[in-house]
Length: 511
Image (cartoon, rainbow, N blue to C red; front, top):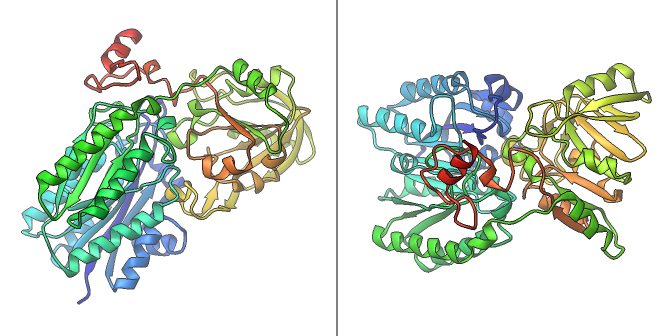
């Protein structure tokens, strides 16, 4: 028998300390599609929605396409953007209530709007209320990013939440496939699912939650072992959390779904929380000053490949503006050469376009978004490349595909070459999660001496294989790994540093 499934997507990782808001226009510049257009846009693009639709086609679902909206990580989402999603989605829900067998959602889990600290929880509550009012009891299944800040409301108002397991997110599409197959299993063989949620007091920076290293690796491995040992456990989510959302539910959490004894599943979560604590020191990595890093680079033996200067404080994939200059400026002042960097600066791109290909330009680049990411840096160089900034991912499983699919639009872009550096200038900030980001613009990072990478962990799949060494550099920026620098207000005493510093102590320091 054919199952009728309402499908939609709402995806944003919200950095609440940024002054700039994420508007409806930002979603339209990312992913915004409704109805049949949503299906046409998603199919074959390598995104989580593409994966879910593959299962829908295979299992013969009758898909009711609603709306899909996704924007790059950034500041607080405007009420207008959330209202736009809800207006379309809730209308489609009401119009199809009588015929629906299930609801399937592609979510992030760390979305904050101007009026709501828990957008996904609020959405799921509204869905649950609507279903109850209509006397309908159908499965509601959602896909979550590994960095979701999971709330009890999200757990209580869904049937099953299924999260990514890798960071970088090479398994985003695969996770949606897994979630859709689990939903189909529930449609074919209905059974009661118990979801349990265990928040922890720990807020870890993005640099501390890569899945190749502890604490994530240890906890993820044990979670997979538990799933293999207990056939009643449908899945365990190890949620790294997203540390730049100043909301009560921010932080590392654990969730389990089981068809068996909930108390046994609760014991599993408590075991995993204890394992996290055993490896907690690895979750708060330290970063070195640029001067110290350069001294360590100079002491390296000769080798092939560039050295990565990882600028986690301007982690584009974490929401920062992509125009920080706190590494680029001082690095240029040292006189070093062979540098590759990318700066998001629409104004500088326009200046390059006006000057024309091959022209010599003197530009003031970067440091224009706010006062947290350094000051503009003056450079003089030649315009070597101009483009529309559109490129296809070289790795279709890139972390970036989880947000945008495999075709990426950086907006009009330019490359300038100076005596010291090749610098990519973009109109839309673009996270360095795939080498196509640079290759498409004629830049070969493999041949550089130093590459500045504006990321925390998401770059690793692309850049680590070409690098001879990598250093995380302590620099200015609102995606800092030192969470005590941020003026938290809502964390209710959660731990934000290895020394046990709690959010209220950091708050007092900043007041």
